[in-house]
Length: 185
Image (cartoon, rainbow, N blue to C red; front, side):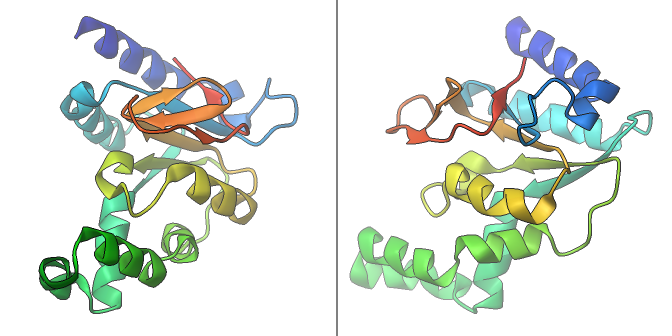
């Protein structure tokens, strides 16, 4: 448990580093960083996110975008949220998943994330990655999101592993290729 606390403390310091915020040292790559952690540490990570969101001494403006909350909002917009349980009972999980993936697309997540313009000093903090599985995969979202946010740094709180080339949610599911991000702490 102490390891995750130490890593999160280092992450807090990294968020204060002007080089991190400017994307320096990335060899002209996009400023997407992934903070991997064991899914068993989810509650500690959520507590940390609450703390840094409330920390007025941060030199950046953290903009938390919880993918599960975005998912629920999209489902409410489409008026399908209250009908999902009934659909699962009648048609099964597989049909429900396919219908939700058709109804709530990557573009809709990106639109909700980018609903307000970002400014210099902002950092997009993506949370809720595990909660929204299997309806959204983060590698697909990052591909679609990066062109829309430009130079705004993106920090992904990821319950799994990233080896620099592949994301593996919960360190159990099949990995997905994504090579444009950097592992931190």
